[in-house]
Length: 297
Image 1 (cartoon, one colour):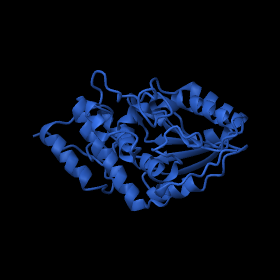
Image 2: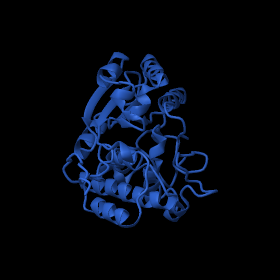
Image 3: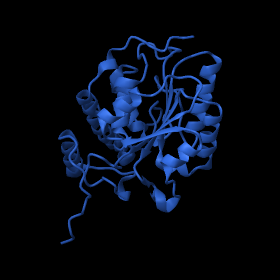
Image 4: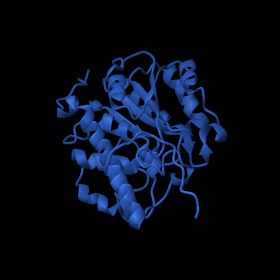
């Protein structure tokens, strides 16, 4: 068996540091979107704490040895939020942060969706939504064949849960007893076409995963101590029930005008709007209050 544990100074990273890195993810997303001229703000902001908790505390990875066979694998199924993952990988040392200045430009390795053949530290190339869980199952099965003990994590957008392939994969994961497979659902309630329950209802999502044979936990996806506690309490990889974490989140979290708004799935900010939003993000998360636009004069 390949030992899963790997010397890693991130292991005891505290909640305050993770919160700071979540803010970093948001501010870098804003900055890179200005470079590109448009980007997926709100989809990235909803999963910032999830990404920060995983990469700065939970995942067994080694940026100095990105192909280490015993590393945990991470599948970014909601690949349109890769703009938030690239800065994390650069921050951890997978590549020079200066490379991100080429984001989405012709010939750049850093596109709107991630390409594992081009970017160090990636385990999955994203595109059309709905495939990530199936790929993660393949990775987890390969680990079993190779007698590896790593975990395989997959971050799903709730919009892609309307795809039938996701539920076929959910059934297969339980059938194969992939206890080392961890599916995290970014449950922000919105997708590009509207509210998920209007487009194609997925609730009761907790009960659905449970009915397919998964162990399911539901938490606040912005509550960093809850994320840490839940992720660190997962059973060891082996033969058993796959693990699902339904993370209730706020789309656009951190920017009041974007929070739970259908207008910011994709967008661009310039001038004073950009400066105002950057200042809001730098100030840190404020209590969520539904946004009400100023009445027209």
